[in-house]
Length: 291
Image 1: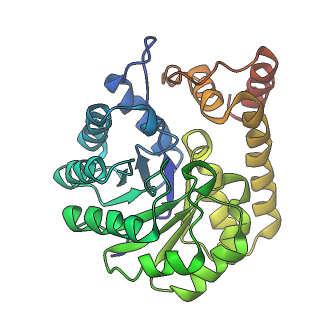
Image 2 (image 1 turned 45 degrees about the horizontal axis):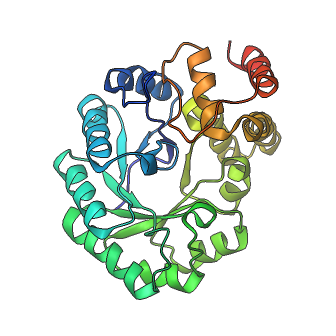
């Protein structure tokens, strides 16, 4: 169940000025992302504003991305939802459109038992027949699964591994050590180098939409033993992350891409527009590093 590639952009979803899905803007965005050397796309997750979209919108995005990029890179569909039925429906769309793998955040908002969460993942895995990556993001899902619970979920042969978007590197290392046959992708961009040093299988991140080459090069530098270069590259990424924490990560990334000529439109409300002061900082960073 090995998934080809290691660096995957958690793809943004282009919107028009009315905050509707802009399917025509998907190819230019993918072209830009892939030009940075990443291995594939993680579609419809947090960075894609999937939780602000209807089931029909999410399905349309999955189909449009596959239609354009299926022969260009590895595609991972995020299908997680508040209901098992919606997650299963999206998993079926991913399967029908020949995605390489699927991923799912645990069911959120309501506090479900581990047994319910396990059944949710089992249902998704069975219908898709694709490798399934657990999306562990406790800060947003509200579900901080223990190491033992994650290991128990991975006993299912269809579960290929974990997208780990958290800061507990000890837990990440323990999962890696205790499930060596599974794949672990790190999702906290500002700590990518640390996780790579521990032994990640790669990364899935939002800033990869803009600077995917930085993470490709961090991984290459680490593999070749050039620790100083890897540190410098992580600092470059972290300078951007620091600004994005002021703009709001998704609004800032969308502004950045629009600014350099990749039309992705705004974020969907209730996301706010970034402040003028933070936008100025972002545009200075872009002029120095990308233009």
